Length: 182
Image (cartoon, rainbow, N blue to C red; front, side):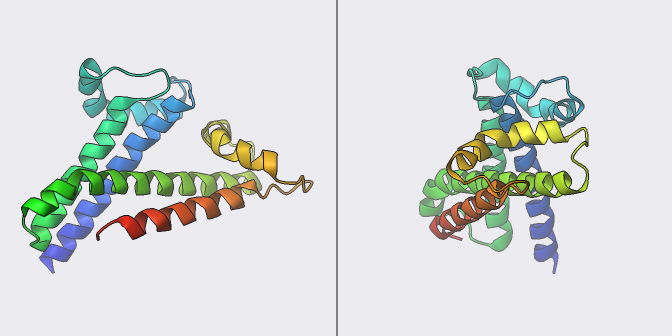
């Protein structure tokens, strides 16, 4: 019972941490203004870890390497904790694959994050498209939805591009999950 509870708690905490670090990197990539309330919230949550890394790692033109590295490191720590709880131990073969599995885990979380942001944006656009968060969601999803919109026929008032994006993201999640060893 205790290992199940610990596994659940560790998985939840690290999933949230990885998601927040990935969201910060995504907001940096699409150039969300850092003084919007939502960007400030994400920055305040993640500054404790990202700011010290920024002193060491250069931040690229569109890539927030510190946030991406923190997401990766959180995935590594989560895997190490899960392996120690489940009794896998730290055999040589497992430790060699650890960086690859952690990277796949971070990619899976990035795909999941994009899926949830897309679902949230679609539902919010139906319920109240004038919400203050809608410009942020639209900016986050524009690089993903615009190529789909260019190739889809115009259907009038209903935009099917979020549905197509969700399907693509789900297929990619299945592909990443099939490569992961557990």
